[in-house]
Length: 328
Ligand SMILES: Nc1ncnc2c1ncn2[C@@H]1O[C@H](COP(=O)(O)OP(=O)(O)OP(=O)(O)O)[C@@H](O)[C@H]1O
Ligand SMILES: [Mg+2]
Image (cartoon, rainbow, N blue to C red; front, top):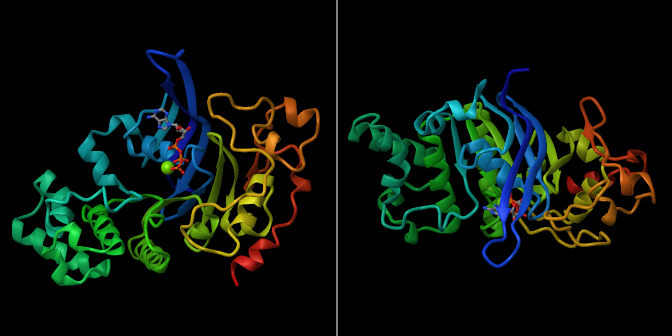
């Protein structure tokens, strides 16, 4: 397959601590292998702090990988300059309140990527902004408004239009609906769904919540403590999770409330500190199926061919009957 995004063995370390405490290293990404095919949407899910945004930032070139390789459209990410990268890959962030400049009109915000590159005449940019506003469902009269005059959903439509004006091939959406009212969340997800099909976009959709990615993602990757612990076609994951963490996430999305924070996972312990990941399987302190030896001592390697997982006892994972409930 034609993979547009490829990560091989990617790690990202952050130095933490400082003047008054001992310096430590926090490994936010721990050996990520990932690829996304052209025109495909990957849903990336996991609890707060598991490394989703770090992964997005490394792909966007905002953060550098500490080790490993990142290929975007066949080339190493570091070989692109900023302008080239922006042409190819664009982000949509969580908070449309802080991501839009309050002193710029909607028109100027949406047109800004073209203006930075000096592309097109003023008149042609204006026409394109109006056209795009229509495509993302933003009323034309709001084009001359300021962000403070818009609702959250409208702001997110502006952010999406700004991301799309330069016709990127790849869109990375980091929790694009979690700052929005529940009633607006599905509208934005539907919009992304339509745009992805119309524009043949390759997309990464990041969320806490499996329900959010369910209808949009062709494939799902589940992250835990900087690793991808399960990865496969969306249908396969929803029908039969191979990792107990995925299973817990599936249960937690009932009833489906796209964009909501993850409710209690019903797991024993808390999310462990990424500064001191548990030995053995990093999930074992919270796992209902963990055994006393292997799981405690041996980090499970990646198993499977198309449907990949890191678990010593995948057969113990309860069939995800939740998948049926999800579609109710
Ligand atoms: N600049 C930074 N310096 C130090 N630690 C960082 C930095 N950025 C992220 N981290 C740490 O890296 C880990 C992963 O963070 P990241 O923001 O990628 O998680 P996330 O999955 O996006 O979480 P959330 O769902 O809350 O957005 C966390 O433990 C976080 O505290
Ligand atoms: Mg994040």
